[in-house]
Length: 347
Image (cartoon, rainbow, N blue to C red; front, side, top):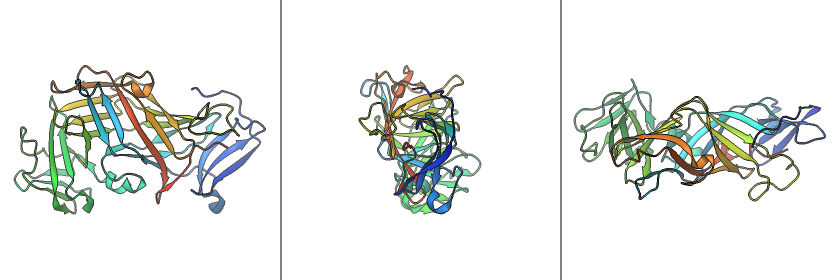
């Protein structure tokens, strides 16, 4: 779907209040409802706010599945219980709402929904603040973090992507292994025994990494530049919208060049997403015109969600011949406190 280019004529500003959420959609009014300027506004009825606010949290409401190739026939699928980010509202004209800048998304298995913001943000790190002990008991210390008690007994993964194939380590935090900025591993420590017994200083780590169909874990490293763009179907104002509506509003998720890199520990795979070029890759999604969007890619499908470009390196177990991937999952919109909001309801 492309944006309409009808000339904008502004007569006044109206505010539609979403009573349950305290979020409103402000838009310009003419006799033609399709001609408007949209913006997300929080609690305008009580705050008098007239300009665009800060970000709206987006977080998983279902598992997020990323598939490369045919599982069971050389392919691999990752399963993340959570993805979390935020979008920064901006004014937009005509049929488009956005594009919104999306904060660098985080993929992991921390708690889902808006409550995951704290744990997810503390679950990963790299660089000068990160060190690893070289003898037992094996520890991970990140001086920039205060790890939550919820990380006790959780899997932690570390990776060195400078080797070919990558070098990955996996361990489990002890039952009482969280202490301030340090995680102490239980058992034998780093359990990827075919490799060196500890990661090097500065190596990237992920607590509660995603699972995969090889029986291992995946760490997803994302970069800046992701976008969300809501496209309002023409001529649907005043009609029933949401699931089953025709036409239906859509959302495009813009993945920047090398927007994500997925590391797998057992087969030591390195999967680069949208690896070359200069343009965002737009992944199509549907919306319920209320609180969620859904990406529904399928292996072998024809839409963009089924043909996300990738490149793969690693051991022979990795699907190194694959050039496209598919993504499936639903995310919801939240404001601080966990309230579900409806940022794309039509006026």
